[in-house]
Image 1 (cartoon, rainbow, N blue to C red):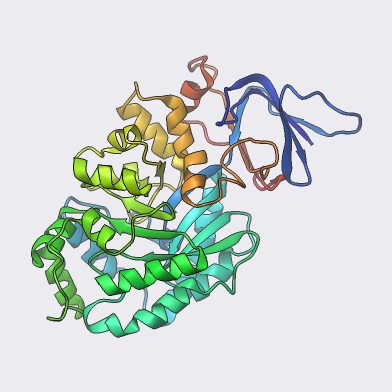
Image 2: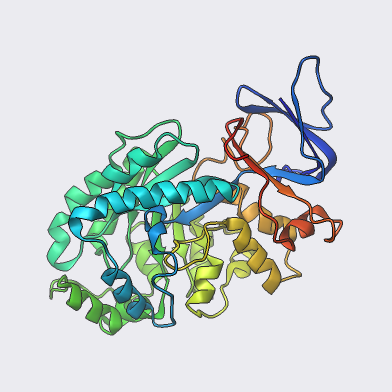
Length: 406
């Protein structure tokens, strides 16, 4: 098959005007101004831009049903309390998560996303629902074990790393949830298992001021929240460290780790992340919804940290579109490099999830994961700015050479 369009943007090379892309057996074989071979079917998208399929490096598909139900506020712990109050009864929770994950997959594909880093608290139920595509999923099994439930660590960790549902579409990773829901030894156990199995690891870190206070002083709203949940006990030790140094003491910081959020970091933290080649998934609209101070993603990029983009969940975000995320960033930072913004939702995300050898750029030999965005005829002539300043949705999404949206 030959795909043509006004512009082809490989991401690992310069945009190509009147470009073409040849696909054979689900893989890209040629990029440029490829000519039609005898008998080769041609799909010409005309006034459009062909890009790599988008990568959502951090999301929670099983929370899709929470759209508009728990509006974020600057009080992060209050938001968590309200989120807990919306949880389905235990006997229904599994089916709710499964249907939410399936719906999240459909919404993602419609938004041009072909790869996700998905956090699941119910891996045994959610993974089978995602295991047969069309999304490429790195499924991070979430581990929560602290205080009165620390004895559940072994069982939850084993469930998180269970790869029995792995397929060509789904690989397994592990996610110690956060520094306030897993203690030092539990986080270290997750790190060790990830290293043993050569899995990716994801952890929420430096997400809120309440987290910083809890790690520094062992008190405040986060401690009160753990009390309300009935998990606080006096054995929990306050590390008296900021989140990034604490994560470093647990072995979290390395090039297989994706840290979600990192909303509150110092210059020293950025230096530590850079020196350990730890990767950061920034969720712009969720960050803004909680009214955090400006994110330091530009400083991180300047320090050669691999920063990519996530949507978090529909509990805190209006869509699962990473294109919407970078359009939001472009509106706030119009002078920021447009190619870097698109790289953050393609190749950088793929690199963070450990699948950049498969996807993330239109490179011969890689999987034919593609999204096609129509040009706004009233917009800028530069194709990257046109995409970022448009409100038009993808025309089609292709995974492994197969069109999965019309």
